[in-house]
Image (cartoon, rainbow, N blue to C red):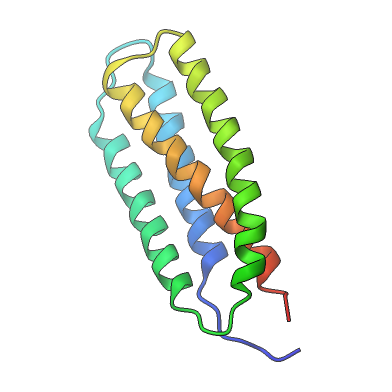
Length: 128
């Protein structure tokens, strides 16, 4: 198998997901009192930036198994969209509202995009 140079998709995705997790823990540690949202917004912004960098770097890869990537990615995206919807429903059912809900909703969207990209990349990188 020839060695291809691929961007650090896994490392960027895991760092992005770690930032989302840290932001979620930060918010949860302050609830139900008033939450200072600036740190959560910064973590979300950094995570979103990593997602964008990851997608751009991956899109520039030539000779990649894009067919396999999209075949796996679309089903993983469907599964994670469903789980993200269930998590969002739990937040709404618990009565969360305002700024914390916005930050958590956007964090869930980043999670629901990045994990399927990671799954699809992991499969497609070994396609010959």
